[in-house]
Image 1 (tube, helix red, strand yellow):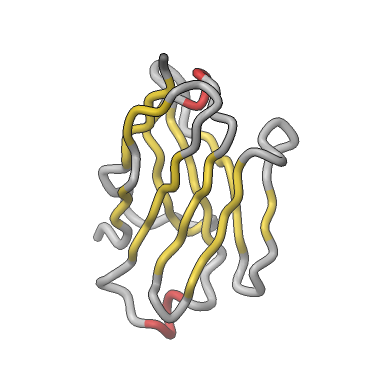
Image 2: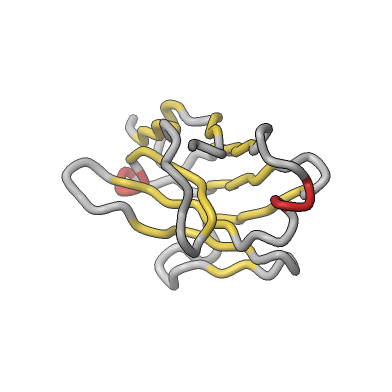
Amino acid sequence: QVQFVESGGGLGPPGGSLRLSCTASRMIFSTFAPLDLGWYRQAPGKERELVATIDSDLNANYPDTLKGRFTISRNNSRKTLWLQMNSLKPEDTGVYYCNRIRDPYSWGRGTQVTVSS
């Protein structure tokens, strides 16, 4: 069963910013709060990759290639996860998903991000 709904994608220019949101409206607080969560992206013709993680203690991690441009955050009471994307590059184009890191739930539809001038 799909647990997360992603939103906030769109068309952004190189160097621009986008903020993605992910809500878990079907999930109760006590289930959401302890989850280690992540944002994933799938570029055209490529495998889905993990771009940011945040654990239940709000510790965030990013691949070295994305550090300084992406920021992941969460609000457990709102059962929401965000991804702030700055200094966008064309290679950031893809469909972005959120899910728990270990044993992911069924994937949602994701939100499309297109970086182009």
